Length: 329
Image 1 (cartoon, rainbow, N blue to C red):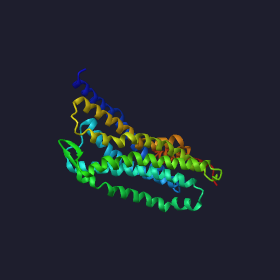
Image 2 (spheres, rainbow, N blue to C red; image 1 turned 180 degrees about the vertical axis):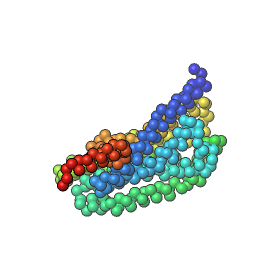
Image 3 (cartoon, rainbow, N blue to C red; image 1 turned 60 degrees about the vertical axis):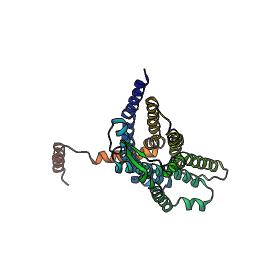
Image 4 (cartoon, rainbow, N blue to C red; image 1 turned 120 degrees about the vertical axis):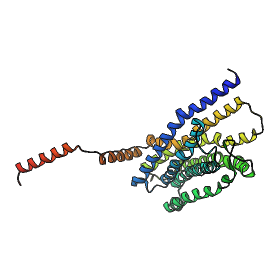
């Protein structure tokens, strides 16, 4: 194959990745986020656990991110549809919400790792202070508002240029690409999660560690570890790709190189969105309490919506009256 046909083939592979993987990921991710929210809000045994509240906050933002941001990207790259490439307002909204719906989710995961460390800390005062439900709710709200303010400048540097939604070259873009994005997507989560996980393990191995942790607490810890691993591994290429594109921005590129870069961007994005799609299914696999809660919710739903045929209900009523008449009190 020549260069032109190879480039065309790679673009086709990118499109088929969106058809075969991205669309099912969005579907399963939305379903998982809905079930996560329902289970964590309906089942009272989860209400008093701070880690669950952080994971619940992440599920709510996931339910916003997948249909409003990731779906738009899939429509553009997979189906050549979407308005954010040709409309400045839609482009600004897309780039702003891209960060505002992903960075808080990363932060909530880091908060959850910190809560696991706090729950194993030997100092009772430290545990009570940092695991207070009021403080946890304040942390969730403050984190969301903080990142919403930090990323406001993205609105002013985002524009649609020649049918492509991009961020114009500016000091704000440089700060975002070379400092903020690697920090919040790669360096920060990797450092914090490794540190808090190490400190949690250290506390659990301590001879002075208490054995007050119940089965739910242990299952939550097991639920969180795979999520932290996915975030750490997927965040490295996702957080560093903007640096690569900035460094190579002025280098002439032929169609083949553009096609290769486009394919790698799709793969990195698919891999990173495992952070939004996988959590519920990790919870379901690891925790039997999650499975029990889901089973109860589904049984309650189907039982409440079970329709008895009219003829059957009439026959049952007649039979009951006949029996009643034959057996007078």
